[in-house]
Length: 113
Length: 118
Image (cartoon, rainbow over all chains, first blue to last red; front, side):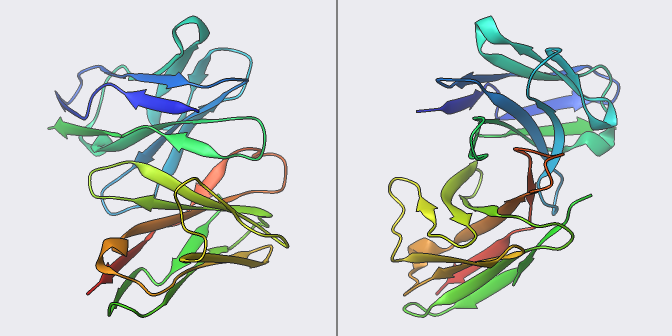
């Protein structure tokens, strides 16, 4: 069975600090990887995705993630966070079949101005 | 971008009644939609996959007779919580997968429905 583990439940940073959120997955097969963000009071939005090709994926709002197959990881990074990045971030894994996703537990990011 | 709506956004009902939640893809067709449940401070748990024109596929441990899913058209899926009880209180979220091909395997999420059973 597939599973996703996010290392941190709550991360607190000051503006301009660098961010890295960990995500490890377990999946038996070709995998598609996603990071979603949920801003307070809003629905889930896609930040970035990896299907194949370059393992360094760039998403919206300056976020990027690196797929490291040997480590079963897909960590999310941003060089300099802003107060507006305060949100909950979910890593998700899906197969190449019909799109069923398994989500990690989520990481709450709080950025202080 | 692709938009998914849910109705209602909040519902309060008495124990024993049934509640229907609608999920609509507003500007794209979705053969496949998904229903999730999110508990407080926890992640999304996939309940079932809704397929237009065929029966839904339920995840292990999800009672199909309690959570009835109907995917009536390429833009509408409904989840009916039958004989609701307080333990069914939760945040229910749907997602829809764009059939166009450009967004293969990408799901677009609705805003969620907060169900409270008294």
